[in-house]
Image 1 (cartoon, one colour):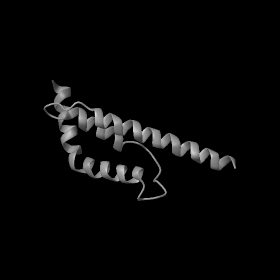
Image 2 (cartoon, helix red, strand yellow):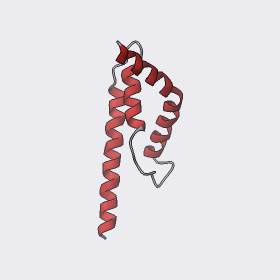
Image 3 (cartoon, one colour):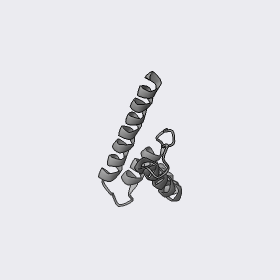
Image 4 (cartoon, one colour):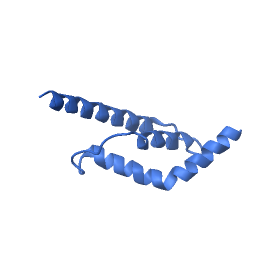
Length: 87
């Protein structure tokens, strides 16, 4: 029984973490270069989580969608980050 309870707690924490990062992405203030939005997306994709048991679950779909978008935008994010650090 104990491992099962632990896994429920772990899943709950992961869901809360995913929810927190998703809200940060939603609330990111879009600037002219969208750096803040890309920074929130990077934080979401950097979450170290085990795969959801159900690939059709909202958590699994959210993570896959974030990973796909990050795959298209990560170079732009790091270019902006480097440019901002030079300023």
